[in-house]
Length: 120
Length: 239
Image (cartoon, rainbow over all chains, first blue to last red; front, side):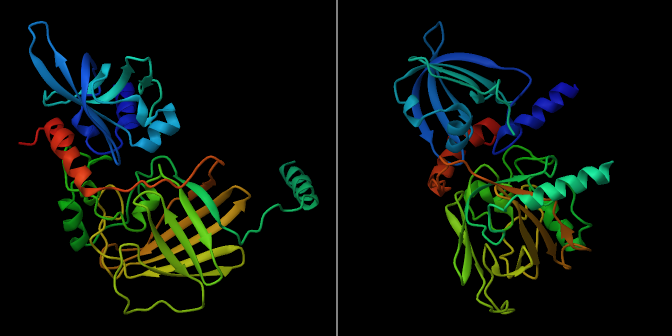
């Protein structure tokens, strides 16, 4: 419990992080639809197709650009419409297909691994 | 023994020419608050007046101990952070520009600035309220003392939603403690909101590395609105 509380303290930082369940993650494969690489929150949406062919639009948000660039050497160029991605998120507590980004792997191998680099 | 070590260190320091001008605060800096100060002056405010308590209870922060989904933090609609709150939002660099008649603190977050007049003028008690206050500064020894008044009362003092009135005054003491560090302490006096002055934990400004640039990290209302529709509201369960 103390570890959970610590994890929460490390990640609870801004915006809607309090909306997410930080005790579990969900991993999804999808195709990028919308990318907003802006302040104060970077977010993107992506279509996930299940085995029956049903498409669900998911959304993931993360830190502002300055933090992504400082901490993960991330670049705005790494993500664009139509890209295939593997996304791990801490999901919305209310069950919406939304999450806070834990890990992103792009088709050309760029990785943003939030779990290994906790917040200030 | 401790005294001897201190003496030896003091002599060693005497032999070292100081490589900086303590009255030069210019440069790009990264601010840092002490751990546990909760994006505020300190973890806990002085006791609030009934007026302030009412305002505080109406504030619904998005982060910190009272953080809940959604909420009404003015930052979430890109309203100006105001001063001093912008100093506690430490992800973004601050550039200090000194001229003989004024010192400018330029904030990358919101891409905005405050002017601290150093031309000998007095604080105008009838100045219009500003998001970032009205400020004058003067050197007391090696400490740059800034006095400010007339802060727009629509701002929160911190992420936790502490209020203030337009009668609030702020005193800041900036001191360059070494070549790459400025230490800042601030004290808020606002008798209509707090039963005694509120003095901050030390805030450290560390010189940014050479590759740090002032960017243009503005908060754009239309972008924030879109973020709210696409992410914040669905994730938080807003209808």
